[in-house]
Length: 419
Image (cartoon, rainbow, N blue to C red; front, top):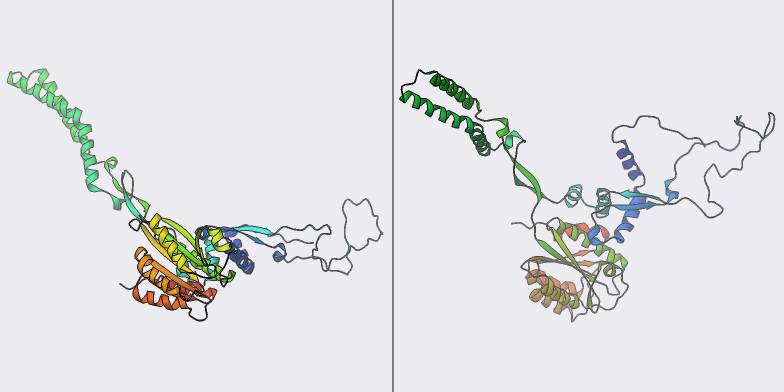
């Protein structure tokens, strides 16, 4: 098989250009692999890279080779088997030169490469159809502010601190001229004593006058300000101080909540977590799953457990209230909650959910968002929650019917309110 080798010199950032070309070429395979990675990733691990595996069969490259048939002359260097005039059997063909599976069951491993954090976030947001500007805002680094950090001897002229520089100059002049000034004072006193004794014309008096002139010159030679005196205001970047927050994730895991609905809920919780990390330095996440009973679990059990049953939503609200009172005092924690369900609930339990929210839960929280997933018609829980929304500005609710609805719903739930 013939090979073509590019002997051109590599230009600046050529590897980055080649990487982008590779990502564009295998976009469908990478998107599929990234979607699988999201389903297996924790909510708090959204902002990191990911190793992506692509099957080797999807990485076929064009090749140049001799086709079957035809006559050609070949020189075989180092030949010990044939002599001039011998005929060589044609090698068996493999369907146009393509490779086949090995008879012993071995083959090439899948191609594995690493997506950077920014690239992974692009694929994550692409599924949610985010505008480019919103992608940049959500994936941005934490905000920082300039903070004073004393003074430095080198810096931007615009940051020159005049008062500090003058203080430094005064101190330097006092230190450098202290010795000559003291010697000058003593010499002047000695000269005055000689003049008072009538010995102003003596050689000793003339020597004192010469010494005084030298000392005055030394004092006058001390510069008023020197480049060593200059001091510049120094500022460093510091993270914007922020308080702590806790996010409660309430998920309905009754029999009607299948894997597709859970995946939509996970995408929504990921967006909420990413949104809160931009506002708070410390984020705690509490996972509560419920069917007829509620239980606090870790994230793996929250999304993966196959336990199911009927639906009693009030059990999750009661557990959330108890956890807040036990572990998260409202004086030091900003409390958020997001509830995902298909809306199916026992009719006599929905009014109890309304009362729990209005009387116990909402007074403790900053914001409570409810999303109803793939429910064609509003359920009893939705109708009771509409009364909660009308009574409290801290409560919001939306419906998600398909994957592309997740971000528009999220944006509506957390858009800035007019002042």
